[in-house]
Image 1 (cartoon, rainbow, N blue to C red):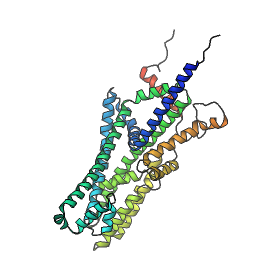
Image 2: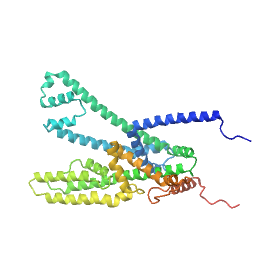
Image 3: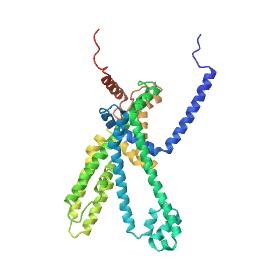
Image 4: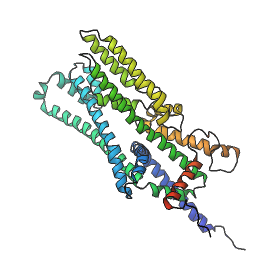
Length: 399
């Protein structure tokens, strides 16, 4: 009788390898936890631009060239616009602080410094003559403040650069990574592959929809704010139109919240200008509020958001993901919690019912067919694409 099992030495070797793999997995989890902000930004950039990357593949067969072109055309302009918006906001805050004499307010903005350094900066602002009387301490504090600010700027730029690099790597090696995972999972008919396919399609739907929605709402908001300035009476103007439009587009991602956190302060600013002007322009401000509510609030919630952002997922679930993510994890939670929600959703739809009922796992959706992606349709679509590309979809020759 032939023994097809493993002998004791093989079992010990397999156990050793599993322990080694477990250690490597723990190390990988620690690295991912340490750089989670960079990872989620890179994943967002990958899924937000992947449909565009696939369209650009018709231009050339070079994956690296198409990935670089996608990054340059899509991601870099958004990053530059975000940096410009941050710079403009920083300038406005700096101008506000330079015009105030409230030491308590200044102290709040200098909270990153130690008490001694903060007091030195505040006293130097209130009494500039001490810079001459005590130049050594003032110079030391100035250098420390400069190093702190420089370190923060360099860290942010490095984070963005690494995230963009990760997005480029994922775009360039998309096919190889997909084939490798398929082989690791044991084929396209397995439950693991079906689960991964559903998660993959859901992430693309959400993040690419997010990108389209930000661009669309930013354009609409910019046209609305520019129109306000064109029609506004003398003395009423909206500053930083491009920056406010970009911030409105980002804020509009969150259902219910949409652009309120941007356009309501804008209307309040116009109201203050109307109060300080000689003419009675409050009717214009009221009309602007109505227009903003219709164009920047009702329009995105009623028409654009349900159609563009996460078309395969429930908007209430995504609302909780966007609102709770930054609260739980910080700034990167805005991207991380939607990823976690999608991972949990697809596990419940595809894997959990069979586990609870003790049934064999299948690569099909057991519950919630109308929510999320159907992995079978993804598999059929991929097979059709392969047949079309290779010419296998043609009818066989008659013998």
